[in-house]
Image: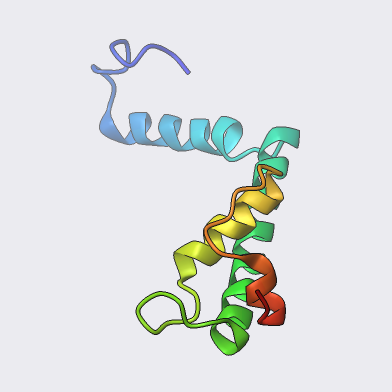
Length: 99
């Protein structure tokens, strides 16, 4: 895309059409990196809903009489997907109601 200062004297409709063409051609084109990030986001979102549902149903009541907050489930699944191993809850207690 050209310098925005060069586009100032253009007609606003032409500038809009150039900007939309830039978005279509460069920004919204799916490459390996964007597909990889999209995969991470979708897997984390789906698995966090699954963990949250399981935690609400079977988890222990530790914090303000709630089983598991969604932020804890999201953090847990994000750290599991990125293999950092950080947890805000005891995972075995969530799954098996032990310890």
